[in-house]
Length: 621
Image 1 (cartoon, one colour):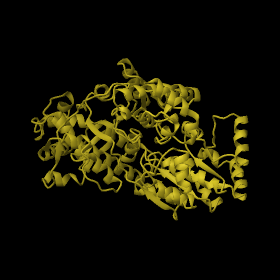
Image 2 (cartoon, rainbow, N blue to C red):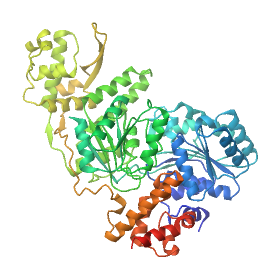
Image 3 (cartoon, one colour):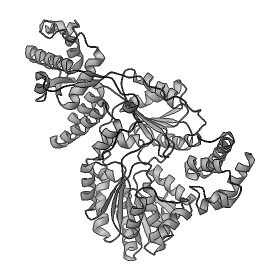
Image 4 (cartoon, rainbow, N blue to C red):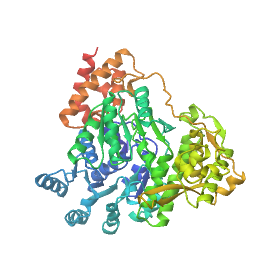
């Protein structure tokens, strides 16, 4: 076998590379620069870990891995130790003596990989250490994880990543590999420019995550909808629920707890000790639902997250894709569920409009939001739409909500014309703009104090939409907002000083009013359909196919793994993932030789755990 295949097999316990991994590994091992776009769960870590090990074997020295999160560094270093690889991290969790020890190991050439945060890498002290290694020819490579953070167009821009241009300027000839799971063409171009990767080979994998089922529903009672989704589809399973506000995170986590769903809150306003405790529990315990803002998630390697839910619409498709991609990293069935409504569109547009960015930048953000809204309103395959955004052609998947349950379509052209006409008449009469609720009242002929105050019950369009339900008209509003045929305008109340979002016509409204544009809409459906055949909370997706005897072995192996992980202060999947345990349970090995051929068991793990695994398997018989 080649050197990279030997490392893959002997250290990590895999028989073959997946997808483009081999081409990436060989390119970087040979000293080439690379920009790697690979979906979450696609095996990005191996794309730099194997070159790091092989290049050090060849005498090139240590690999420096830039990583944004302490928890991610800890778990990845722990996983490498379990595989027999010398690795360490330098971050604020170490005291002075511990940091000194790591620096000594670095200087003495005892490390294969060293993980650092971008802020630490660019300090004079650390750059001095790198200068010495570079002078000795002992810098093997630089890996920049979560590379989208360098781009202002990325969904998680971090200014400190911009300083990483120093790697190109200061350490010429040392290969660099930048990796991310999410970047559209604009973000990719920015990564290349900011990190000076113009000469790097780009590896863009398919963005498709076929094991994830995408479901998007209209908001009605979103808390009830969410609880129904979890209890009917994922009771007892690990998941992440994303909310926009910190207050909403805490309220929803408590509500889920009160209804028998193990849940924890996570947002940047909580004490750091509590955030760390909750993250550790989520990674190490089974069946916990983390309710969080987007402060939680980047770099979370937990493979058995069975669902990601959004109770508020994200800012853009990149954020949606990145966050939903945290489900099903093990390749087994998972779900991405989102509830959205017109209030989400209004809130997101308000955040863009009130931001301090230049107008050109805001225009790009509005375009990205509109693309997500178009995905939410789509009546055809969600996956086709999602992949199309990233420039990838595909066929209907047969596994999203629209494919499984094609929505009923109705012609909303008449309703759209009546809505736009009402907005025009109201504005024409009062020389003022009004919000969605008031326009809805006028359109449906509802007499309120505000309607009579402004004499809007006297205009010609009063009540012309009474034959449409409020849900139908709100769907029309969302569709017109998504296509730009309806706009939002900010108005400040003279009395209270409060800022309100009001509806206005746009240049695109004219074509709809003339009837030149047909407005086709999905029927309003907010209910969650059960997938049926719900598995018990103790049954892993990886073990669903096992017979009764193998199931017993799997359960015993999981209990043993839990004890080992607790003793090592690591997540259980770092010891062995569920797929490896299922493979052991199914094969029922009697010897170390039989155990050796199971995916995920490298030489170090065979030596460390082989006899214990055989004992547990034997005790299950």
